[in-house]
Amino acid sequence: MRSVGIVACSNAQKAKYREQNNALADFLAETGRNVLVSDCLYEKESVFSGRGKERADELMKLFSNPDVEEIYDISGGDIANEVLDYLDFDRIQKSGATFWGYSDLTTVINAIYTKTGKSSVLYQVKNMVLGDYQDLQRQRFLDRTDLFQPSFHFVQGDSIRGIVVGGNTRCFLKLAGTEYFPDMRGKVLLMEALSGEVPQMTTYLSQLKSCGVFDKISGILLGTFCEMETLGCQPDMASLVRSFVGDQLPIAQTREIGHWTDSKAIWIGREIELSDHA
Image 1: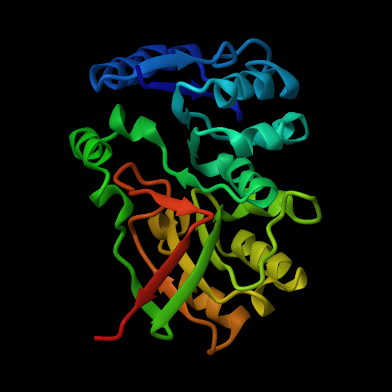
Image 2: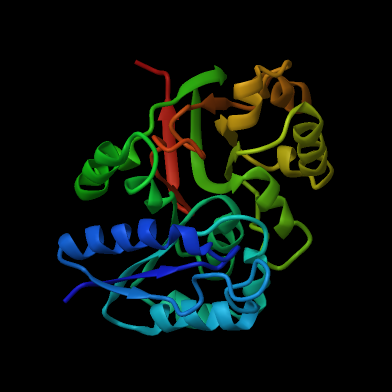
């Protein structure tokens, strides 16, 4: 029987989310999947469902299980990068399982690509049991075609091609200077965010520039920037990015990747090709 796993490598789930998480597990079981749940899911001490090695060990149990096809991290927050030094990337590379997560799991997703070449999915499966788009998200999850086809429009340039890296901008930058940061040459950088206004985004863009990222990548994909959009911040993110990268680097934008509960999924570590050409 096909198996899937539910984990929380970042901040522990609060007890009040137990019913919601059980609903997710029930839905996955109804699709014919055997659902395996991490022992490090709910709060045990402060934000921890277990310390870094414990959470990493729970993840590795799933990567080591030949019956597990997909692993869904339902967490987010700040502490996912604590697990990285305890992961067995050789075993992850040999595993048939695909990792799914979003937000702070950007750290794990990009580390997996950097260390193994394997792609992972940037998506929050809890969108199927929370928010106003549960039915739509369940349909997408079952069909999988529409789920992985976010629509983009070009802000600058007319074509982009390369392997996608990145995700949540704040969390992606936690990897800078570590062995887990991707080789950015020829990559397409995906950027999105839940929180942060113009000062925070300026900080992140300045760090990316100082790291030489904008001189190496082939293009930028902009997802949603929830707080900036809600507050109507000016300059908006597209204008802010252009002020850092100039007018030559292709930039595409979508409202279908990010933290809103109607967001679609995107593969990190796989090639994307977008074009405005007829």
